[in-house]
Image (cartoon, rainbow, N blue to C red; front, top):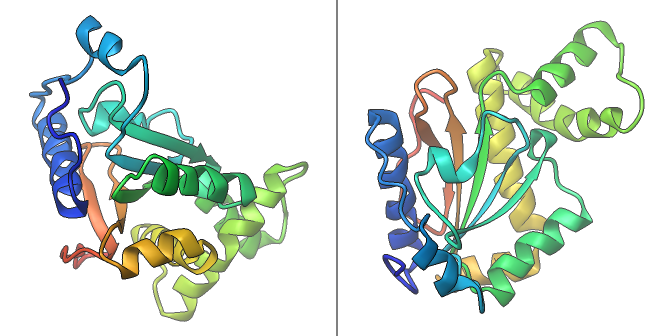
Length: 213
């Protein structure tokens, strides 16, 4: 049985925060990962959050947030860059599945962010569609530099904040739900070494952002 069937934005965020804290402490509960849960959700899904994160193999959402089957509607791209398919997928989670929370999950040592920084330094852009990913990250790097943020963690935080703002700018469905208090968007920066996910942006939810980012 799920912990909470229909949480609000704040409750949904607290569930994920508690799960990440368990993961960091090395005391995961692995909720909703048994045969009973599998059978329960087979007829339909009712996730309580949309997770939009980087595709990095070290960023497995259900593991680092200690959740299970049917809890998260996960959308992932390299560098968590946004295209029409991403927006449609997130809107499906929010509008059709009625998820009250959207998490944007970035992480340190992100290859896409690093590549965008390298292009600005040496002018050598990657080939193929990787170039498209890098081009979509570049505005975040430029914005960070314009604000005097040049450290890797600062650039990452800026990219997560930029992604949060971009989602709300481009998705009327999501923006209207946030304005009505029915949903929230929270940006997190994940630390690969210790497993901690820090808040760097929040829209529609009173959550303190990490002062170091």
